[in-house]
Image (cartoon, rainbow, N blue to C red):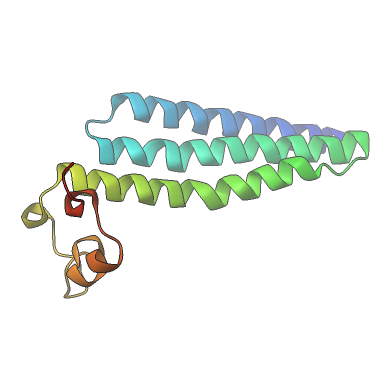
Length: 131
């Protein structure tokens, strides 16, 4: 049983390392900001999450201690990485892409970040008075 656990933990660490390296390589080699954003938010999240799950399994199976810190870090990472990526993508859209150059939204309306009703609720930097 312990040998199987060791193989499982080793596999999780190797998988996590491979995903982290692929995510880091993608961050360096992809062409534009939107593509670069995809690599670390997906691959590196899986890589770090896999290493944290391996750490939890080690402490639970070999030390007899349930490590809640790794579980909380994993949950926090899985919840915050997509939200952060969404904020960065929206900022990139407003800074580098003109509204007329955007593809169709796919729902028959314009993109939500360019909707005039939403701009009155949450003004952008362009709407601020010049000082």
